[in-house]
Image 1 (spheres, rainbow, N blue to C red):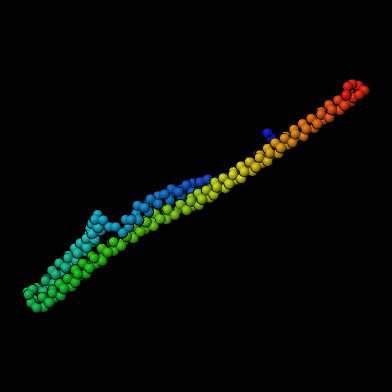
Image 2 (cartoon, rainbow, N blue to C red; image 1 turned 180 degrees about the horizontal axis):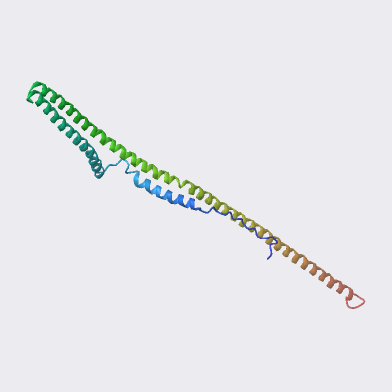
Length: 224
């Protein structure tokens, strides 16, 4: 059965294909996402191994400073003792005792300052470690953000797929409606033509037969 119209074909829009740059963006974003998940819960957590490492580093700094101060103290005290002995002939006199006592008080203050600095330095080590961890987390976060471009491409392709589906559905509806109308028209035309033609032929045939009977079966030619 011919419909008399060509079938409607739905156009198909092409999707955007990944370029090497977009593919790399996906890979970098994947790495960044895993890095954020692996590190965000550990930023403020200092386990025993981390604390031991920071303490060891801080002790190394303190012990180095303390060793330098101790050597300087010993060297200075030896010089004071030699000078006092040469000047006074003894180390127990008031003047040499005052001189060495004053230096010992200064040295004790330096030790106190060193202990204070040790505590401050430990806090600095913690803050520095925290900053490094936050910097690492920020790095992974920036890597994860590289996925925005591939995501935009995916959204555009998703919209293209939906548009293609809509076009295909519209074409299918147009083809269905066109086919139904044409089929119905042909069907009605066939029925009408057959009915009218048959009626005319039957009616003509009936009239002919009846007329024949009237002409040839009259009084002249035959029996009434």
